[in-house]
Length: 132
Image 1 (cartoon, one colour):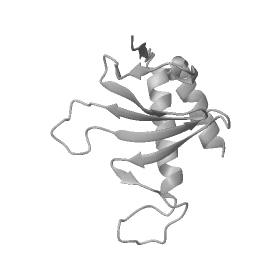
Image 2 (tube, rainbow, N blue to C red; image 1 turned 180 degrees about the vertical axis):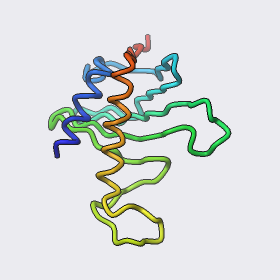
Image 3 (cartoon, rainbow, N blue to C red; image 1 turned 135 degrees about the vertical axis):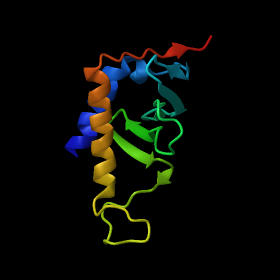
Image 4 (tube, rainbow, N blue to C red; image 1 turned 90 degrees about the vertical axis):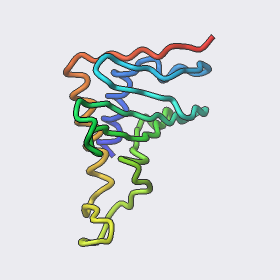
């Protein structure tokens, strides 16, 4: 559970306005190609899409893309999808038809943490813009 709690804290540092209830947001773009879209907002959860456009746009893996659900009441954040792969099982047999790692769900959540750490270390600050 610690990785989920740590990712929640990282997201709050990167997106401080995200926990503000009752506000609407439009997509935010940062100069380094990081995009954040609020897809859903509910009383206790928010679903966001994180994507980063990299200079290697001719490669299919050049744009990391994650859908993350943030649970405000439990103060955790969980990856729902990574590179358009959804519904991760806690554990996979190996080998498997999709060639997922044994602990794929844990690994994508760890990657989210590393990605957010990189953004924070680089001084990335994203401010959501309220719609009027």
